[in-house]
Structure formats: C-alpha cells, structure tokens
Image (cartoon, rainbow, N blue to C red; front, side, top):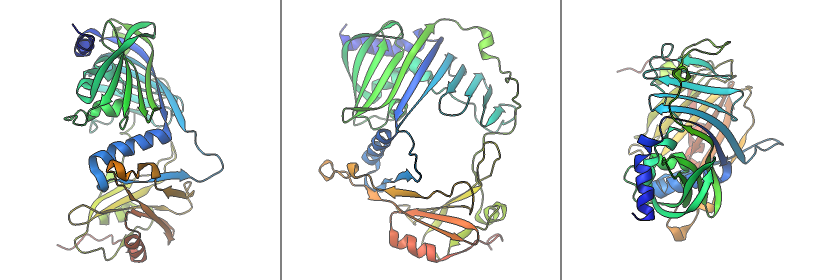
Length: 374
C-alpha cells in the first residue's frame, strides 16, 4: 500500500483501535493570529456579507497574545468520558458523562448535572475527536511526510491543506484551526489517533494541539462516577441568555431599555435577549437586540446595561487591514460602533453604516412594557 494509503487506513480505523484511552492534551492559541485566520475563514465563505471587528481593550496592561490550557481526557465513547481542563479559568473545570447522565463543575461557575438542568442537552467531549480523526480526510488534502515521536509514541507526519470544497467537513477544521492555509499533523503509527496538529497562516502558527501523554486500553469503571467533589452542590443550568419578547424584556431588565423609533421601513427585531446578572462569578445583567432589514442583508446590534457597572472600559474597534486583499477577491466591510448613556443606561450600537447608526442613536426612546396590540 502507498504511504498515503497507510495514513488513510490509520485514520479510518482509529475509532475502533484508539479507544478507550486516557490522554493529556495541551492546547495553545495565538489570539491575534487566530482572529485573523478566523476572519479569513469566514470571509471566504460569506464574502462582503461578513463584517470584521477588532477590539482593543483600554487600560495600561494589554492581554497576552497567547493562551494555553491542559486537558486530561479519559474517553471510551462519545457518551462515556471524563474530561478535566485547567489554564483558562480559575481552578479546574470537569465534565463526566455516562450515557444520558452527566455532571459538570468548575470553581467559577459552580456545578450542573443532568438532574438539575434536564432542559440542557448532554455535553460532548472537547478533545474526543483526537481518538477518531477521520473527519480530517474530507477537510484536508493530505500529503505524507516523515516519521517522528509524540508522547513516546511513533507517529507519521502528515502535511494537510484545507480543501476548497469541504462538503460539510467544517467541524474538523474548527477543532484544529479554521482559516489555516496549512496544517501539520502527527498521526499515531499504530492506532491512528491524532497526536499533534499545528495550524499555520502565512507560515506562522496560530493554534496547536499536542498530546503530552497517552495510554490505550480499558478504563476503570470508577472513572465515570458522577459524584460531585466536596464543596460543590448542583444548581440550575449554566447561565445563558433568555429569549424574551421586547415588552417582557423591558419589564425584566433592572435598568431602562431603549429602542430606536422609528426604524427603517421593513426592518424588524430579529433577536431580543436578556442575560441575567450573577454574583459568582460577577456578571452584569444586560440585554441584546438585533435589528435586521427586510431581506436580512443588513443588521444593527444593540447592547444595553446599567451605567456605573464594572465594565466601563470603552473599547476601540479597528479594521483589520490585512484582510483587505483586492487581488484575492476578498472585500470586508468595516463595522462602526456608537456608545451613549441615557437615564442610567449605557447603550452601544454596532453596524456597517455609520449614518444609520447615528440616526438610530438620536431616535432612541424608552421601550414599552405593554404587550403590542394585535
């Protein structure tokens, strides 16, 4: 069989041979490069309809360009695994799933189980795909390389170039680095597991997954016990926005809600969300409104929160000039932002048309708490 045939056979059989396993994975990302790659990925699919916005946080200490975090995964199947991660949030976040029963907890957000939040779907493993990476075959054009060792395992090096026509294989790219022009892979030479991937844009790495330790074979049943650690008590589901009609949203928000009146002919509210506040971790309540034109081609987003909260730092939004490549047939429209404060409410409007944003900002009125008349 040819070298490429050997690699395809490894990837095709990984689900059968590489599971169960216990592994430790380090994930690394370069923030600005990852954002540039993602914008490239989206612009290639949506053209001028995709809008890029870059945020530069105010303050004397800019955030680091790079982040990394470590995950320990014990994986038997998509419905039976234990995953623990640390490095992004304080402490450790863990998820254990055994069939349709599951539990998840972390130091910042508390604990949630399938019994306490039965309206939420069962979680999936973040890195389980490493033990069944066959999706890469439809996402990348593969070229065999040499040989190497990763985590003490012999591995086959593979050079991957994203396909122009992926036929629904986007999920594989999202896991290893959307927008890459090249992906370097290392495949376990015996079991077909993906031991390392490095996504590059313009020769510079922006996302990397690397297995630091791995053991193949049966896992103790105790691995999948759902008992919560000491100090954790299951509560409701994870905090997530509530979708409400505008008048209910205005009544539920702990600050006055403002809306543009009138809006351009044919425009409508496409989304109205309330994010409730939370003490631990501290989260300010806020609302989000999305207005769309009749055909959906133009959108204005509005976010509102109480003035004087903990998030008073204004952000400067700039256009990423690297994406303005006329010779590549790419065109990205800038996104403009307007912020104002009215009667104790901070209102931020965002959209592609600065004239329209200014007109909407001038037309803001308090939202009614009465249901619309039929």
